Image (tube, rainbow, N blue to C red):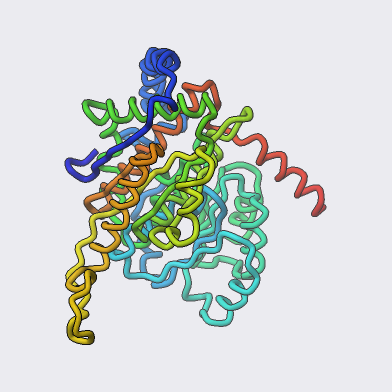
Length: 405
């Protein structure tokens, strides 16, 4: 990873780890790591998105005509939109445009948007790997934006017989191919994430700059140790809940992206972690009692960003007492709460890992995406779980279409 961009610490007690199992997983890691490298270097495989020679299947020059739009609306579900939301959230300070997301069925939101916006002045990106995602099509048709030769619509889908491709041909709309070998939850570093990021004004080349940093040296060792530990925990089924404790608002949607990645990739064969996003310190006042004194079935991932804040609390000018909050920033208060929690977790032997991010930029976010993709895939392979499919989800989709027919 980028030098000094991330610091980590952890506390996982021996009772949660099986030494024999860890030795076995350690032996298997090298073989699986070699498979990962092969996949990165092989065209047509999901991990090829991490290859340094990866190229968009469209020239960015062809996208310049869309850069004039000040409002961008994205319509998609799951992996087709979660990565873009994470980019927008993490790098919001750099984005000068208004970004709107339609990633659920919310009639009030759709109607309000149609009423408040001149839809001809909004750039719409409609993203669906299959090209037939029910919710995406429902939102698209409810917005009623499709017109012949519309110059404010971009479709991204697989290049096969599907609704989005047929519409693009029938109405002569701008179309970009979604690589059929890249599943939605892994697609953020492909056209699915990079094209919206480019149109939002993000440097997509910096976003991909160091995405292979985890494959060598100390960073590879960090990837190896973390993957083996989590694969062991997944195998033993002692800690079933993975709680993301988030102390930074810029990470909220990145963690929702992680949630899908972990749940869909590893939730199979009666195994998996239940990934839960917990906003703290707010949740100190609602869920902390359960976290500390409830069932011991949770692993906590603690996320924070070093935030530089100059504005301090000034109590003395309104209250003639020297209180402990005086002359502190909100970030100082939040950091104290986080460190107090970590001390308490240690005292009660509750397992956790901390990820403290020291910089906000495209390169850092790209490395975060890459790290968690690699870690999740390796954990799955170590447990002989296919991390790329989601058969149970497909079953629900099939039944839904039958009920609507």
